[in-house]
Amino acid sequence: MASEGEAAQELRTLRDCLRWAVSRLAQTQVGTGHGTASLFDEAVAMALWSLHLPPDELDRWLDARLARSEREALITLIERRCSERVPAAYLTGEAWLRGVCFRSDARALVPRSLIAEALDTSLAAYLDVLQRLSNWPRRVLDLCTGGGSLAVLCALRFPDAQIRASDLSEPALALAAENVSLHGLATRIDLVQGDLLAPHSGEAFDLIVCNPPYVCDASMALLPQEFRAEPRLALAGGPDGMQLVTRILGEAAQHMADDALLVLEIGHEATHFERAFPKLEYAYLPVEAGEQMVVAIEARALSTLRPASRPRRTRAVSPTRPSDRRPAA
Image 1 (cartoon, rainbow, N blue to C red):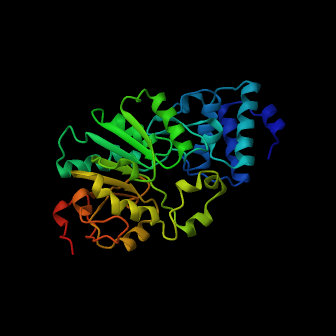
Image 2: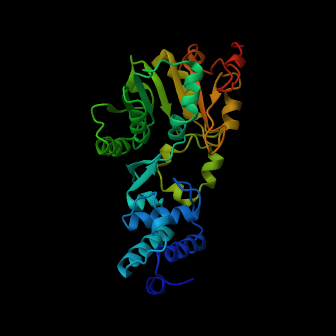
Image 3: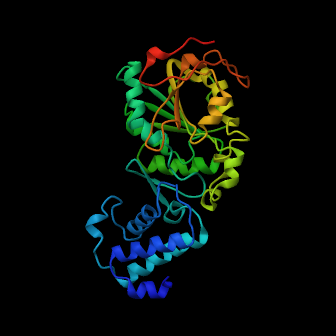
């Protein structure tokens, strides 16, 4: 493997640099998953950022020869990624989600929620099944907003809606404020600090989106070092990952309009979710990463729940087959 000096001297094109970068990342066994699914994608994202090139225009630049100063800057960035073992977004200060750029640093998780994809795909199909009016939703809550990426995407996806976004972490909300300002949405997105639904007393929303801490203890223990660089508070969900989810399901109905919907990310914890809520009526919203990673729950399914109590549940259903729903047991 070429040293930094050798790489800067001998590499020429962007294609050369990407080959070297993938080899270097593989050599140090860096972990991916913060917006990239492979070492090549990771190398591309960092290279295009370092060269001040658009994030979606790789092919046209692959055979471009790089100046030595450009090669050195890129090599330095790759070496930092290998040695510091933090997400690339924390080194570059930005992350892209659904084609939208967000500021990113260690105050919050790197923007990557699967709900972002669902907003444009499976959720849209599910809303058609529910026959929601064209002006729905009017009020949206992004619960556990972190750096505010979902709040911004909701504002862009639902241009007539007013968005509220809350989080327990004040540093995360400070980052969210920067992202709200970046996209010129300060008049439509209201940021609030507080514990889950506590700061929303007396308010009712048409749509609640939430990417809560849901990683179970066993999975937390196995996370690559890059994930440990993120705020633990935003990841850890207790023994089965359902600690915060249980609270949310117990309290959400008090803050939902009659035709409201709760969209909740559960990631790889579907088994724990189904075990914890075997009779809860909900629908999975498939995304590219998997079919059982995001759930949609209608207000009526939560209407009998009480805060901090074990919920009364109904059977899970398909988002495309509402006739399969079964009455509460």
